[in-house]
Length: 334
Ligand SMILES: Nc1nc2c(c(=O)[nH]1)N[C@H]1C(S)=C(S)[C@@H](COP(=O)(O)O)O[C@H]1N2
Ligand SMILES: [Mo]
Image (cartoon, rainbow, N blue to C red; front, side):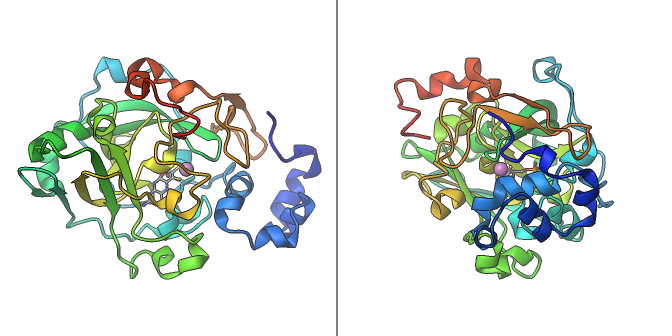
């Protein structure tokens, strides 16, 4: 597969001198396409805005103590820090890749509490201070693959979600885990804008099957690049499930509920045919509007760096997680 837009159609000069709207015209995107929901434009705005993400603004991150277990240090070239922290999806803070870094810098992440409830024998509410006291932090270098067909390699810091769930002690009825982002329209402009924020319903919600949630790779993430998460990356606590598309990695979590039934998930609520509950990275199952066979590598390059690589089954984690889906039709359970 190739990039849907011909680089030869646009020169760097044009890119820097023209408005986005004009650029869309050059690229042959009609006026009608501009009124499509953001989901339909995701790949496009991605291409237009992300490749030269500016350095991220300074936020009040602080260093974290962590170990670096050898098994998680995958010898992969890291995506530069300014891209990880300047090229984001966090629709509560805007729809373009540079918006979250620009708009979330004053997001108040302290004090912060997270509650684990539902089908558990010991519901718990923890502050971030409790979290750092109770759970030793580990650096884990994971591949990250967005459903929009771009990818990064990120040195996250966090701990296995399983340790937190064990603390709450799921009952025998627990089959799924539901996650919820903070709902605070005062702080999160996207939550005030309704349809202007891609039509997503807020708070952002996500979910996993209990066995997926208990898998050692599933990371509750508190930091990146040696320090606490910047707001645009989902401070102070977000989920990372490296074998699934990035949208499963819900940010700024305040609530985790163990449930009997499969919980609703934000992108699935918006477009059921396009974003499934499982969202396992799979090069053989295309998105209805684009191929998932390859991915654009977000690297150190500039605007016209369009390095692509093949996408791997389960994002390269098949030997660890394929067993979770034995006997399942992955085309139906996309
Ligand atoms: N609450 C919330 N969580 C979210 C999103 C969002 O818009 N809101 N975007 C998701 C998507 S589509 C991706 S690819 C990742 C991006 O994470 P990053 O910006 O840290 O790379 O966050 C996910 N988590
Ligand atoms: Mo994404």
